[in-house]
Amino acid sequence: MSLKIRLARGGAKKRPYYNIVVADSRMPRDGRFIEKVGSYNPLLAKTDEKRVQYNEDRIKHWLGVGAKPTDRVARFLAANDLVKWERGNNPKKGEPGEKAKEREQEKQDKLEAAKAAAEEAANAPAEEASEQADAPAEEADAAPEEAAAEEKSE
Image (cartoon, rainbow, N blue to C red; front, side, top):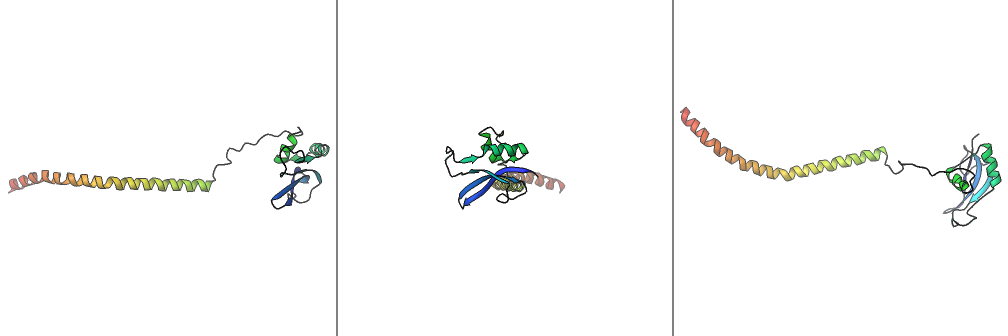
């Protein structure tokens, strides 16, 4: 049986109050527990000594038996050097999921396609005008040569 030292929520809606309990890890958060070893009232000021209260002897006993504190409880216990607590590092916490990345890529592709189409549309009239301007000159150049070729063949 794996034991956890964790918080069990109590209190009214929007008025949280937590008991620090030792419980089997398979039990629900607010369910059956083995022993209540302290309390935590997050509504009190951080400097208030009644904010976190626990029975240090019982905590030491349960840690000796093999109970593992949750991250939040370990933070409380680390204040009195009962356990070693280190800040977690999750560099991927704010990173979007696969689906969001796919949607973003599709959005970028659509924007690039729209930009390319807009540039093509902007450049097309200028190209058509230059092509039309070049076409009569080419026809004018070709007309005397064709006329001369037709005269020679007759």
